[in-house]
Length: 151
Image 1 (tube, rainbow, N blue to C red):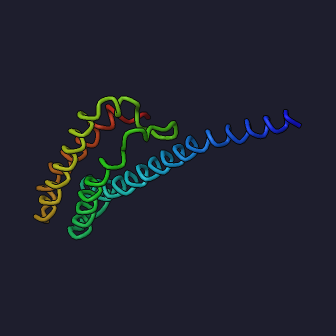
Image 2 (tube, helix red, strand yellow):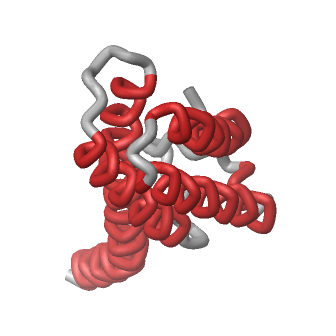
Image 3 (tube, rainbow, N blue to C red):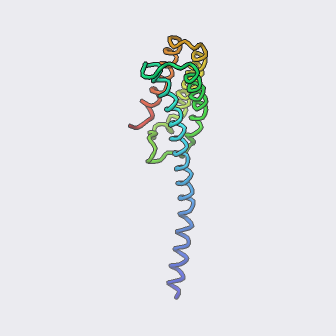
């Protein structure tokens, strides 16, 4: 009887100790899902604009402006979806990202600057004015992906 009681207490303690880990795992999984969603939206906007810039889709100044505005907004969101401790095996973010937080934030700031410049260029309605700004935006995304995204 005493052994069953001790086994029950031990099981209760082990379950109790695993709850914070499970809650932590759920929080991290939620952060990863939020991060992936933010990048899905950002990537979709870049894809819309890329089609127009590369001539695969007809240039539509209004649609381009909307996509540029959305990309610039998402660029303000993305840095916030990498909180400390949110590394997860299902994420494509490399571990080095958290070890180089200052450099990562600098790359994020560059992306924000480039997407804001893209919004300004898009307001011109001139595709030839937009192309260099779009290229610079894409380069800022690539700089971070090359360093901190696992393929």
